[in-house]
Image (cartoon, rainbow, N blue to C red; front, side, top):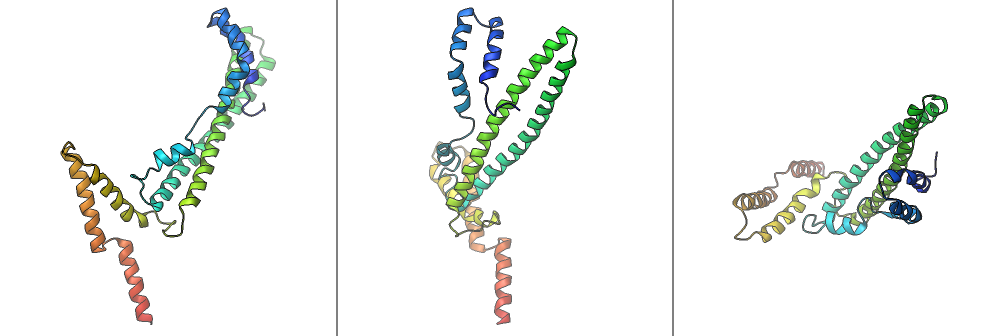
Length: 226
């Protein structure tokens, strides 16, 4: 297998074919920029930075508690895990295509088919390099979500059952939304925000959540045993 994420040779190999697309002077400049373009391709941003994760994804108005932030980290990390696994299958499939094309090139006698196989092979190798780049950045974000989960897990909330934090977290979220309502807010928006806020406050007061009832039964049984 070629060196991971190294497209320098692929760029150089493809440069002559750019004569079909670019003016000769542009082709010359492209060749001179090969090292720079490889550097650009290697360090380009693929997925979110830590800044974007903290400020955009985990912003305080939407996720106002450590529990809410923790569980959003879980969701985000799982998405990247599933995508990384799918990418792994795609990579295996593409790598098998590369080996198949290499074998076809060794035995193909028809010059036109041979040329097509060579083009397909170059494209497939470039695709593999792109997959490796994406996989590296997916893994980087998976590790960042892991770090953030540890940061937010201060031992004050349940990390096994996502439902346990949501009533308190949603209460703060709806209060934040209610504070942003103005006279220009639409009737459906006001109805939705205040409807949820009133319902949350009623449910918290009544203690009707199922897990509250289970805890009460457990406490009652414990009291009887004493």
